[in-house]
Amino acid sequence: MYKNVRAEMSRKGIILEDLAEALGLTIGTVSQKLNGKYPITLDEAKTIKSCLGVDIPLEELFEEAV
Image 1 (tube, one colour):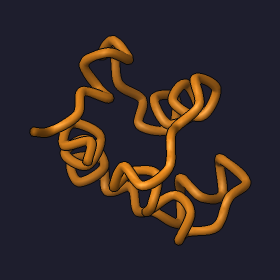
Image 2 (cartoon, rainbow, N blue to C red; image 1 turned 90 degrees about the vertical axis):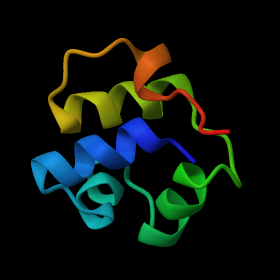
Image 3 (cartoon, rainbow, N blue to C red; image 1 turned 120 degrees about the vertical axis):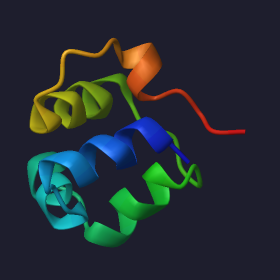
Image 4 (cartoon, one colour; image 1 turned 45 degrees about the vertical axis):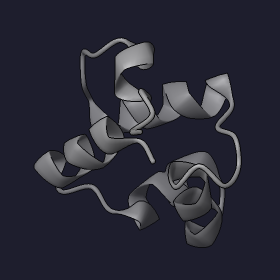
């Protein structure tokens, strides 16, 4: 799970539906990607970062929780 992505979503009031629409994916697929069941592509990561409107490096934003 990407705790920093989830935290930024919460701060910005962005829901899975918002990311799904921006990515052209279903809400379920986005949920599974954010939960680590499927990989997130570089393009998807850039789109998510853009949707969140954050100035955090991708490496930090998508740091995996252990």
